[in-house]
Image (tube, rainbow, N blue to C red):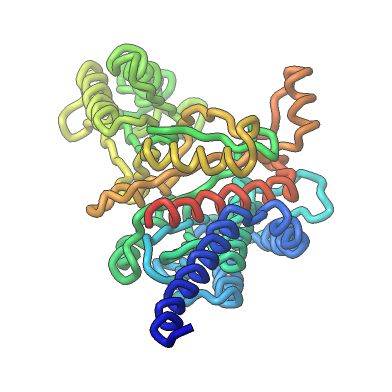
Length: 450
C-alpha cells in the first residue's frame, strides 16, 4: 500500500473507532440498571435512614442532621457549602457542559412523641418554648426524603458517564416552620450557586402504597397562612351581662360567620379552607372578659383567593364588632403572619409530564398513579416563585406497607396520616422506589436538555 493510501485509511479507521465508541456509550446510557445498582446500595441507605429517624431535630435546630448531610455529600465527591440559610446544605457537582438540575430534601422533624412501636423508634425529647418536655419525631417523612436524596446522589455519581451537566443537591432546614426555603433563597441560593434549570422534589405519602409514585400537574399543595384575631369587649360580672359587651359571644358569632367565606364568598370552583384552630378567652366561670383570641389557618391554591380570604376576615370581624356597639378603639385586630406565609406549590405541567414519563419508564406505568391536590403546605413552592421563574415539580412517594394498604381498603379503616405519632413508612421499599424514581428523572432531564 502506498503511503498516501495508508494516510487516507487512518482517518477512516479512526472514524469507525469513534463511531463504535459512541455506539457503546449510547448503549451504556440505555443499559444503566438502577434496580440492581440501588439494591446493592440499599443496606447502607437503610442504616442512614434508621440513624436519621432515631436522631430527629426540630426546625432551626438541625445542627447534627445538617452535618450528616454535608458529610454524606462530601464523601460522594460534591463541593459542599454548609450552614447556609441556617442549617442548610448545598452540594454541587459539575459533570461537564449541560443543564443544572437541583434536587431538594427537607431535614427537620416535628414535636411528636413517637408511638409506632418500632425497634428503631425515636426516643428523643426536648424542652419547648414553655419549658414543657416534648418528643421529636420524623412524622412527615423527612428522614425518607434525606435518604432518597443521598441515594440519588450516589447513583448519579456512580453513573456519571451517563449524563452531563451540574447536579445541585439542597438539604433544606425549617420546612415545618415555613422558613427554610425563604432563608436559603434570601442568602443567595440561586445567585451564589449555579442557577438551576429544573428543580425536583419528592414527598412521602401516607395514602399511597410503597413501591408506587403519585404524580400531579399544576397546583399540588396549598397556600398556607396563619392568622391571629384579637376580639375586644367590655368585661364585667357574669350575672350582669347587660352591662358588658361579651367578647366570648362575639367570638362565637365570628367563628360561625367566618365559615361563610368558603361557602358563600369564594367561588365554589376555587378550593379553600378557613379553620379556627384555637380560641382562648376568660379566666373564671362568672367573669366576662375583655378579650378573646382566635388562631386561624387559611388554605387555598389561587393567590387571589388568599387575598379574598384575608380581606373578608377583616371585614366580617369588624362588622360584628360594630353591630355589638363597640367603639373604634375596641375594633378587632387581625394579624397575618407574613413571615410564616407559604405559597402554593405549582408543578410546572411540562416538567411534571417529563418526570412522570421517566418514572413510568423506570418503575412501570402500573406503579405511577395520579395524586390528588392536597390542602397541606410545602415551602418547596418558593423555588418556583423567584424572579428566574424556574420550573419545579414535586412527586409523591408511596410509603404505606402494601399489605397494610390493602387491609385498610378492605376494612375501610383509615391509615395513620402524616404528622401522626403512628406513621411508620415501609422504609426499605419506599427508599428504593424514591432513589430509582429521582435518579431516573434527573438523568433523563440532563440528557433531554443536551
